[in-house]
Amino acid sequence: MTTRLDILKTFMASGQPLAPLTQLLDIQLVAAEQGTARLEYNISERHANTMGTVHGGMLCILADTAMGVAFFTLLEDQESLTTLELKINYLKPIWKGKLIATAKVVKRGKTTGLVECDILDENDQLIARSSSTFMAISGNQALNRTALRRFQN
Image (cartoon, rainbow, N blue to C red):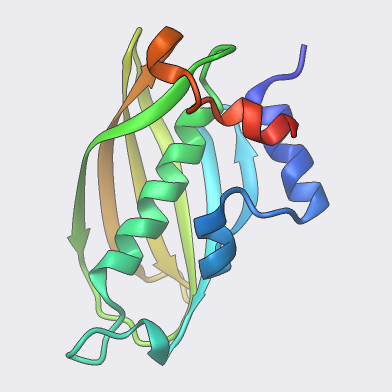
């Protein structure tokens, strides 16, 4: 039986993007294990807000994606997922360079899970810390949302 982790490792080996958004932004999945994921994202001036630093929304996208991938590794067959809530603390401004997001599932329950993510710069400085609650959905709720279907095409 192919696991969600097997699917992610196949995608990493092939170089295919995980989703249209990761392709658009060139976010790379570089590692995944059961309950964890690591993504990298190169940012530049084009990601700036009006203050000139990287827009917080870009950090939220990176954290939400990393945490979603980590939670995805723990899903059962025919389950999909959705983010119920997300919290992020911005700890240090950044203007350009490589961001590394490392996410870990803290707890997976029957339907919900708590996931945390640290975003570091290439000098291992903590830029942001995020946490999120995810919900595993199945049955009719997961129809046309099952990520596995997309990955098998």
